[in-house]
Image (cartoon, rainbow, N blue to C red; front, top):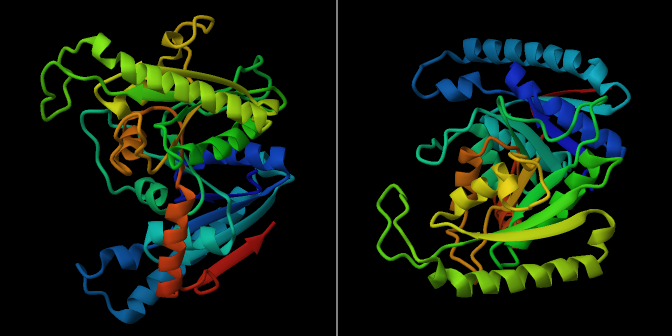
Amino acid sequence: MFKRVLVPLDGSKRAERALPVAARIARETNGSLVLVRIVSIATELWPYVDLEAAHTQAVVETEMLEAANYLQRIAAISELEGILVNTVVMHGPTASTILRVALSYKADLIAICSRGYTGMTRWVMGSVADKISRHAAVPVLVLRDGGPQPFAPDGDEVHAFRALVALDGSGRAMAAIAPATSLIAALAAPERGTLHLASVIKPVLDGLEDGDGEQYPFDLSHSEQGLLESTRYLCTTVERLRKEHLGELVDITWSAIVDTDVARGIVRMAERYDSLLQESDQNDEFDFIAISTHGHGSLQSWVAGSVSQRVLNATRLPLLIVRPPDMIRAQDAMMEHMNVTTVAEMQIIHTH
């Protein structure tokens, strides 16, 4: 369950789109919010601009004061009324400093709004959301600028909430199931949501793929064995999850498709829900996608990290990105070795 949600803000309306979702989660879990703004002007300019130390310090102090005032105003908006809100301002590199705040405040979810998606054929790495999702020790919910919000606003008709979890047969990929269930429970409340387990099978092609991943004709019969294995795996997984009482929290469904590109297949399944279940309305999308940063199971070969990042940059839907426990343990060991500076340094904190 998500009890402490961290929301990075940069003063823009785009970033503030994460607030209603974070507030919804906090209310349903009786949790709290941590609003953070990073002042990184001097860090980003160095070493390209030679700034005098005194001038640099003055700029940083001014920016931090303005950032603190901004977060105070945000914490007081009616949408956050009744929720415990911590506000944090720090100076440093944006992505890594946000991760330090999350670690210090023991956040169990980061909710961040990213720039618009770029599609499957062309995507750019390096944004703050990309970096955070690849290195966070907690699940990261990435909302899209201009994309749908993963819940129906108050007063709207009953919303049948659905989330797609991408699986590849590995334990690492299954790490996304529990966080996805917690998120569904919070966002669907008081209704019951649906957890949809999905697998994409790469076919045996008659030819080869070109460098852009264009699909060559293939014989579907060649993929029957893969689909059969995937079906058995998904059915077994659903039954096991139901026995573990996950079915008491959400409905569980599943499907598998064939696609030469795993990331494209996941996006196609999530954004065209009508092709999966006969009873769904036409063009009805999932509310969010959940995926692990690392997979590589027996059903198909996922290159570690690449599928989740390509889905992040291709879909218009919110994406819950989860790092597997073994990857988090490796990161914790590295952080301990590096003796990371705590958030107590160079910060301004206000609690409401």
